[in-house]
Image 1 (cartoon, rainbow, N blue to C red):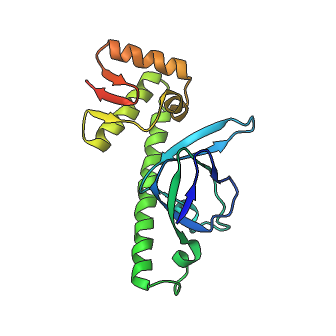
Image 2 (cartoon, rainbow, N blue to C red; image 1 turned 90 degrees about the vertical axis):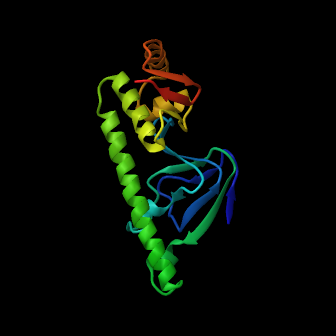
Length: 188
């Protein structure tokens, strides 16, 4: 087990990843630090999400992202060598772990493709709607909670926060959706 405190850097871009971490509690921001020092949010991870899997079979095992604890975070850690090399753990357990890694990587690939589809839209309204519609599909409900506040949502959608807030207000006024903070309900 490993614990990181709120605001603490877990990994920086380029750091060697020596383990796969399963988040047992807390929340982690994944992103990049731009040349101007700005943090660019790529994803937020919570309980049952993992870190390190994306580099498990990458030569050099270097992190491609910056990981920061949003809240206190607790990880269950498995040394990377135990996963990629036979003989360090029970082979049936290792085989199940590798299969789970493949499943996680497939899901991550789908998430990335969905985000690319959203970001390829020129219209802000269309980006918002596609993002929220994807959440509706995931939760199988017209009502759901997103993991982002407005600033983070704007960052995720690569738009200006004030423009996002104005467009959400217009969509609410037109009866397309309803929201309060990060709780949304799609009406159309």
